[in-house]
Amino acid sequence: MILLLFDRLVLYFNWIYQVLLNAKSQQRSAFYWTFTAYTIYAFVHSSSHSFIAMYILDMKSLLLTKLLNLSLVFFF
Image (cartoon, rainbow, N blue to C red):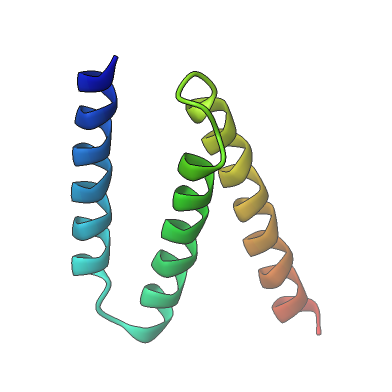
């Protein structure tokens, strides 16, 4: 169990490093910072058993927020 959690943490921080490394433009960087913040929130505020479910819920709310922002930009 501890090894599984450690393995997940290593993969997770490696993924964050790669995402932030690939963020080159200002707008893309802001999106990736938001994405990473939601991921950290999901990881910290959930147990190891419900991490994936919490992650999916947070990603859905992030996607809805992004879509709402885009719709406001296009309609106003």
